[in-house]
Structures are given as C-alpha cells and as structure tokens.
Length: 350
Image (cartoon, rainbow, N blue to C red):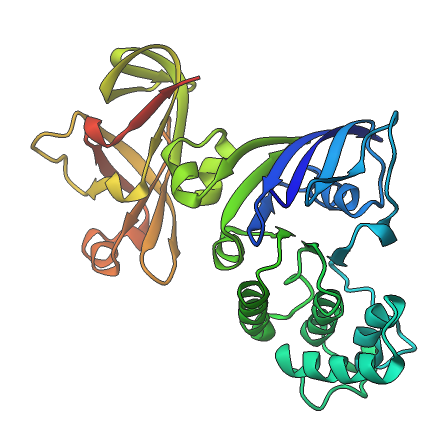
C-alpha cells in the first residue's frame, strides 16, 4: 500500500476525519462539495498541515504520527504537489521552473535543464521553454507545474483541481495530458476534481468527502449501486430516495409512496437509474406498479441523451432520447405521466 492515511484534525470550523488507502500506482479522485475538506486533506498529505490524531504513511514510512509522534517536513516526504493556481516562480522560465525541483535534489544545472527540456516535450509544450509564467495560458502553466512535480519522480503526487485554471478550449487537451502522464509513469496519485467526468477520465477509484468525512469510496458502478448520500446520487446522476419501508411499500420523506421489488422494514435508501423512468403524455397501461403525474421542470441535453427533470411530490430525473423529447413535446413543459417498474429500484437498509 503506497498511501495509508487515517487522521483527524480541527481547523477553524472544519472538523476533518479521513481514512484513505491508495495502492501503488493507483489514482484516487477526491470529490465533494465546497468546504468539505478536499484541499485541506491534500495539505495534510503534503505535510503543510499537522494532524491532531492518527497517522499518514507513504510506502509504509510514517511521515506524520499526530501530536504525540514524529512528523516529517514537506521537503522530506518525496511528495509532488500541483496547486490549483500552479504557483510557478514568476522570475523563472518554464524550463527553469521544471528544473528547479531537480536542482533541489542535487542534479547539476546542465542535466536538470536538459531533463526539463524533455519534460516540456512530454507535456505538449515544445518550444515554450523560454516563456515566463505571465506569458503562459492557464492550461500551459498547469502543464509546467505538472512537469515540475513529475520530473522528481515523487512517491506520491497530489493534484488540487488541476483543470480549474484551463479555459474551455484547453481543458480537454489538458485532461488528456494528465491522463497520459498518470498512466505512463504509474505514479500513486490523489487528485481533487470538480466533476465526475474528470474523475472518470483520470482516476481508478473515487472517494466522496462531505463535511470532513469520507462518506463513500469505490468505482462509479459501486457508488451507483448504493449511493450513501443525496450528494453521491446527484453526482453520478442516479435518483435517490430515503424513507421508511414496510414490506414492498416505501414512504419517502415527502409522504409519497413507491412500490419496490424487494421487501424491507425500517429506514432504507432506494436508488434508481434515470433510464428506468418511462414518460408518457397519457396514462400508461401495463405492468408498472408506480405511475403518477408530474410537471416537467427542465430538459437538459448531454452527448448521449436528454435528462428530464420532473417536479411535484416525487421529484425524479428521467433519461430519454431526442426523438422521445419531440414525440412527447417535453420542451413545451406541462405535465406527463411517469412510470417505474418496482423491480428497477435498488433498496438497502440504512
């Protein structure tokens, strides 16, 4: 295990209690709402913030043992850190920024600059070695910051929203560069990202941080099968219902009732893929046990489908095709009939 961290600390109003394990060569994406503690977690791993209790181990070496133990300073941890605003040295060229870390580790200036030139090629910036940070775009500066960190071959790489500084036109290219470098060098990495698309492109697993706690971790399929919170369900695009179940009848918080395929008693969380929600203009006939009328609040288009948001006592999201939008006149709003088979729900006790 390359990273084993289990720690707690109090910083202002944030109470952070985190448990993370990342295997050698694995990339873990850290997602969560603003203020959840994502950047603070990276600062702890880098040694910029001490922990109150617990431990941080990198390659089985304890680098922080809490207030009662030894702590390794940032420069002794062999950790690469790419900040959200890249923090390049403004008085140095792109080449010398990359060479800086190597020189700090004892490389001769000529060798460090030669290695930096190679890294400029690797991150897609040939011919930009003489440019200073103010002459670089946000995406280019972030590429330089990434190269500066990777050039030292760190045991652990930390990326704090590495795509945030890139404009829309450069974002996809930068994401591809990050993806390529992480795969090529198999560096153990924890990356804070803003949305699920970035997590899926860059990471092997996802950990969701809410209010200073890891509420769930796993692959996107594992998160989707049993979302631990409303935030997780919204993040992966599934519908999520909490309530009391009595046999096959689930009463949700609004008082609406749903029929589910598996019998339970007590508090449960039920999840449903948006593709399982069928929409009609007239009341449907057939086998669905859950049928109700609901207002169309919005239609949101993506590459593969149209997401239809329904309101009312049982808010739900449906995924349909463009042809269904036209046939049902969903862009016009109004009310539709929604139908869900009981067997489509995944129900788990909470």
